[in-house]
Image (tube, rainbow, N blue to C red; front, side, top):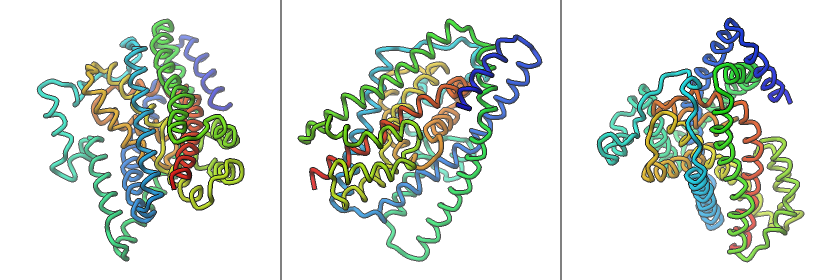
Length: 390
């Protein structure tokens, strides 16, 4: 309610047409964007490292193998659905005045050969990607470090490294919670900036199609793709959803898979009849790595921002970003507003116009509600399928 109120207040202030007020709102919006950029990259890198580092400690047995397989399949499906809808609906570009920062050519734009750009993602210096803000290279390093840690034998040295990374992650989470606490002020500024600078008709058309792609992708994944997975495993989707409805509804209103986890586990065990050893292993793991809605949001939003920055959206580009969005979503566990932060960091790293993320922010709370409900529904489906397999 506070966020919605901030959105309304900002829109009213922007429509007043006062130059000094618009300048203040632009200043506040710019400060918030810079703070997001400051915290996004290190937070996401640490999240990826710690997520993959726990793979070894969670075991590599049959249950985990099935869980990881279904997680990757459903997440790839969600990203693919988002890509298909984006191509079909084709959101238009925002007017240039809506982008307050100058556009820069994307590092992934096919200027020479696409192979050269893929090679440029592979770092040859462990410090350079951080200094240059090359998020794709940082994600590759984070995956390698996290996976390497998961394969190290348990020892005091490994425990010290993992605890140190987790401590840094907790510190960044504290800073992010502080930023989110003050976020209504940022939403007022972004909303006022949008109302004051952008032609309403063009923005409604472009942003409306973007929202249609994001929410439409979630609806297709929720009601069609995930039920197909269940049917292929001999499970009744209506029965599974009916039994897991308390968890799905709680996720919708809390916007937190982690906060919903106790209800998810209780519904899985006592309502759906999933065995305790499966539910208590699969669901916490899925809460960490199974992010269908996040993958779709990262992909669709990245394509929208890159398109507005002048990057040609070839099929090769779309396929590459499907892979990037899936890997990023898997490593996005436990980060407040993680999808938004991660997309911001990815776009900042390739020089895309991140000011567009400010326009998306006021409506992100609605998107986040739907995404979280989809994530918990996907967690439930994975748990049901693993329970059927084991």
